[in-house]
Amino acid sequence: MEDKLQFLEKYRKDVELIYTDEINTLTTDDLTSNWLNVLKEKDSRTKVEKTLKIWKEFVSIDLRNTISYLDENLIDIDLIKDNGNYSILYSVGVGDGEVDYYEGGIPNHNFNNPELIVAWPHIPSTIKNFYENLHNGFYYFPSRAMGLVPLENVAFFEDDEWGIIEELEEPLQINLNSTFGFFNSGMGGYVAIDYNNCDNDKATIWFSDEQPKYNADFWDVVDEWIVIGFE
Image 1 (tube, one colour):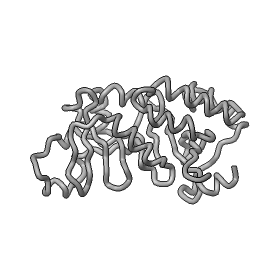
Image 2 (image 1 turned 180 degrees about the vertical axis):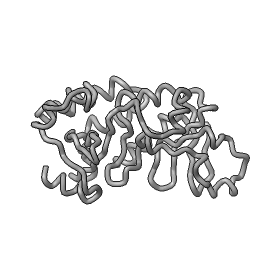
Image 3 (image 1 turned 90 degrees about the vertical axis):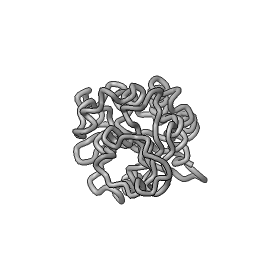
């Protein structure tokens, strides 16, 4: 645990690993009942099994490849705290005996993103299901990217100046004032939803320096990109 904490502190100086004694004092005011149930287990294997059960309950179809990877490579689950906010830390086996750390936020119906709050009723139900029942974002801990970002950090496209727009080879097919980037690759790539044009979870793969790709399936791309990040 000390080695794990030292690694985490390289990226966030105020991060804490929360141990069993403190976890046992927490209530549903701090965490959802699902995550309390997982974290109060002492055995790592049991925590992993219960975690996978939650994923399968809520996103078994949408993130089936992610679940399959976690099923084979998830090593442990911990609770961390950063600036007063709890989240779930995933220890994921990658490569030849190496471990990567992913973070999943605690589901929260109250979030600070004014534009997204207004748009939230129009966001596809599958996306709301992920954020409201599983995690408020799930991403690579060191970069806080290569994953679904917390609702507070979801990009509102109208707020940014996109130089790529001047270089588009065809007319822009999304409205920037109704488009939000839920997945951030950390390298200028987004999986974005225009809530005025998102039937059947239709999404845009948006790049800061490449031509966008329209009419993609949101979950197919997110599922593929998360697994690419693992690998």
